[in-house]
Image (cartoon, rainbow, N blue to C red; front, side, top):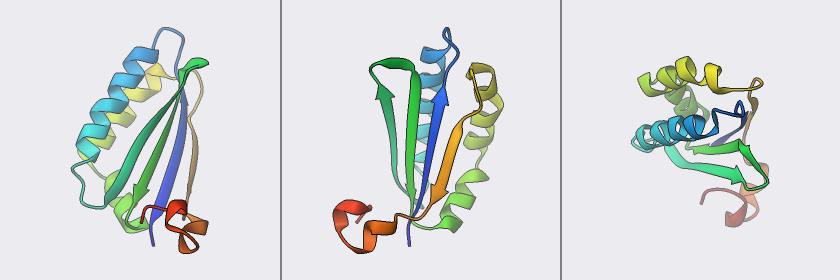
Length: 106
């Protein structure tokens, strides 16, 4: 069963571009992971300092492997200085995915 992580980041006013670039760099490296199904960055046009990241993994084990990668460690080291507040993170399974392909990653 797939596993989903949603993280909302609020950049400091002068750090939005740097945060976006850091997320993009991390995405490029994460896309190489075999257990990652999707990695989507959503920008709020009304709040340019807010970024929402949605990651779909094949399994929770694949998510745990992602957490151990060097590129995610680098992201964690660099992101704190760019954030106005701690990120909001939700982790779990896509509950409706068994009902319809549009509700998951299949």
